[in-house]
Image 1: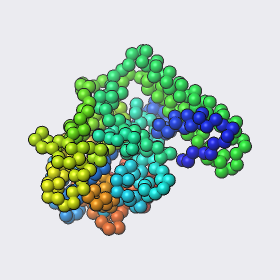
Image 2 (image 1 turned 60 degrees about the vertical axis):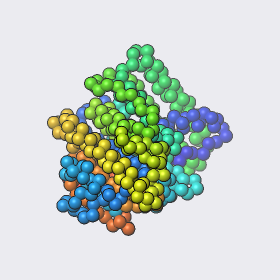
Image 3 (image 1 turned 90 degrees about the vertical axis):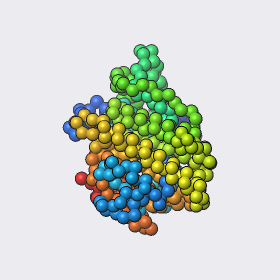
Image 4 (image 1 turned 45 degrees about the vertical axis):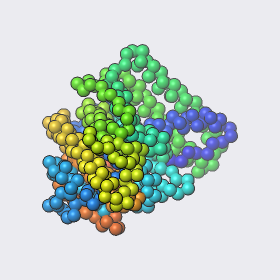
Length: 431
């Protein structure tokens, strides 16, 4: 939604203050206090490494249900029937190398063009449609993240939602109950935001009468966003007064050292699992920012010789390729451990938490060495979908990745028949 033109009769500072409030939160369609659904809740974890993996070790050489596991996928062999590997997927017209990293979940075209503006991400659209059923509609997380420039989550207005990179802060948000004074302070902050909206709404309503048809329509859209935000603020106030869930897990300690790349990933994946297990949220994004990662530890015995970005531009160097292979394998092991933990966690209906949780792992780059943005490495696990196969589409004329996104939205019970560049769904994984 574009921001409407601001008349000189409306103070620009006040108008922008109102916009600043509306950009920071997802939309809401229904109250959290609705009756519990008769069907088990469905969840979604979306993970992206913005430097990808070595494609020659990731993709299987054959396809179908009887495919041979690639070297990387052998790390996930125990979950062969719980995931699907995709080749031949990408976002049409999303090119520009590293500039595409913010478009992985938005599919916004031409990110390098002048005046580019991102669009709503998959997670935020799902949150809009599903409404606030949990304390947090979504959680947006990051590892080694450059908060000012990178995120998987974007608002409908194309504004970056900064990722949380502190596991300790996230733990406190989810599980530590403030005292009466702290709760009152939180409620006061919410009320102050509401009063700003009241002022903006009243001022805009007064000058709306002098607008033409097009501007009036755009302003109506803005006012609708204001009303929706008021709803969310009211519900946030209700959540502030509800007890937080309890957990036996200890509060984690943040890892400041960016070289501890894999321990940081493990910690964030543990927090994602805790968030799902406690039903604090049902939608999580996790951006692993390899671009911002300096020389780092592959394991306790070995460090990379260069920062992750320079390492990814290997130029076919045997030494760099050997290091990258070890890095990618370590990522696969962390993914395996996540699937193991989700499979070992019982859900409310006695099923595995993994069966109710879609886990998407992928990247905006098909080959970081040459900044290629086609044939993206995509793996989808869990969620009770039809898995155990390699779905191989045309690696030259790729199928839109958004077809998978629409399939996932529908599996979440979101009424959606398209998302950005989609041309349909991927029926092969539908049950």
